[in-house]
Image 1 (spheres, rainbow, N blue to C red):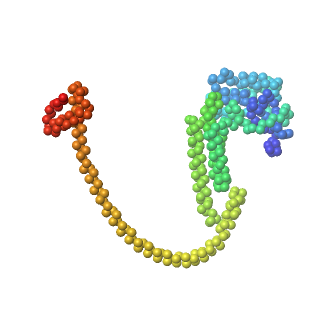
Image 2 (image 1 turned 135 degrees about the vertical axis):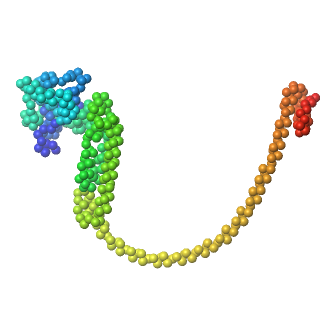
Image 3 (image 1 turned 60 degrees about the vertical axis):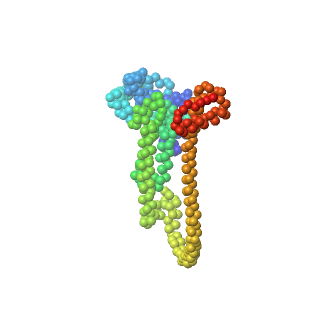
Length: 380
């Protein structure tokens, strides 16, 4: 498709899993193409400038123009071109002016050109000057982010996938609204940085993500994004309601049924069926309402004779059952305490008394307790 658009070259990441044993310093061609040239980034030399230039922990720090030029010259004989691809934001944002990045770039061309075999060319000039050494088949998506050089920097965890799927689900509603402001916001919500901030990678890649992340954690980035998306969806819903409310008043309704919602073509036809409204003739059937004769059946309620049965509640005689509590006779059971005979058993002589007789002998003790005399019971 890109070749059909007239392009002569395409730039891509020289990822190891794509190249295998091959060298990124040659011109290649995408599989299936016969005109388009493929220029692959030398990510090691490019990242030396883009990411490691101001890293004080890097073994090659500080990086000078002369040192870097020597590394470039060493590729002579092992390739035809050295592609240095990096973002514009490398200069001044990722690498601040205080790091010396601008002075480095100013001195670099002259340092490289000290070798007679090297010169600078644009991608179009390189594509015209060199033939591809081989075709490369790259069926999977590729990027120049992180060690994997794939899309995991943006779609590597469930938060990222949920966020991007949620914003994609709104496409039909946004396009149907025809509102240019909503369309602009929806596209801005698809900016890759939103999902990049949600990355949860660790080690070296995690440090890079953390460096460019304005949020404290990837989870904060996800929560903030989903809240913004929810507000946007509410605004989209309000717009839809407003449009629906104004549909009957719009004489140009058929025009709304173009590319956006083909069903809109059939909807205006429905209001043309007000003929159905002519069926209020059915309302003339209030004759059925004349059947309130049935209402004459209130004769049935004349059976209040039944309520005369409250005679039954006259059985409160059951209440007289509180006589039962009159059984406080149980209180007389303290006689059990008269079993002080057990104390008599402590006398030791009780051992000669048969168990059956001990109860009989205890009776005088009960009488003594009843008269209040605490005489000592005699045991024979």
